[in-house]
Structures are given as structure tokens and as C-alpha cells.
Amino acid sequence: MTERNHRKVREGVVVSDKMDKTLVVRIDRTVRHPLYDKFVTRSKKVHVHDAVGEAKEGDLVRIMETRPLSKTKRWRYLETVRKAQ
Image 1 (cartoon, rainbow, N blue to C red):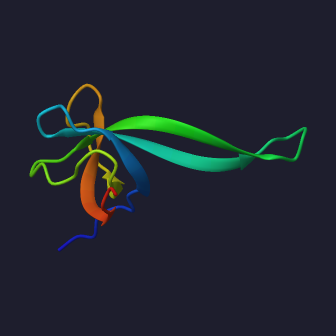
Image 2 (cartoon, rainbow, N blue to C red):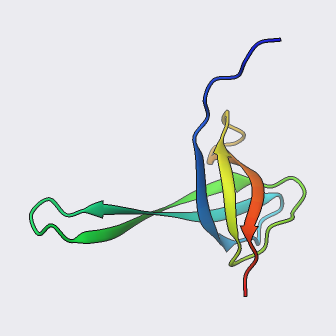
């Protein structure tokens, strides 16, 4: 049996779960501003494949990079880290 390559794993907040089997997840990262030395938050929204439809809006989820599943989907849902309040 062959090993898989290392896949990126990220955590993010579900922004939308209105599509069928697809989530929109916002991934936040903190970067240092090069001039002002202040930490600023940058975010990116990605489309995630959720075949079961388990995650809901506001949940903190763990996602994994995968092969292209559609025009915009390149990530797959792994698990819910924390449910929405």
C-alpha cells in the first residue's frame, strides 16, 4: 500500500451552508505588517465538499486540501471542531 502525499489541513468558520454538499469556509490567518509591526488578520473564503451535510453555519471546522472536485471546490470537510453557539 502506498502512502499519500502530505495534504494541507486548516481550520475555519463556516460562513454559508446553503448549497447542496458544499460549504463556504472563512480561513483566518494572522500576519505581521512589514512597516508598522502590528499583527493584522487576513482571511480567505474557500468552497468545501461536505457530502454528509453535517456542518452548519457558524461551526468551526477542520478541512483538508484535495484534488479538484469542481470548478471552485479544492477542499474536503474532515470534522467539526466546535459547534456554533
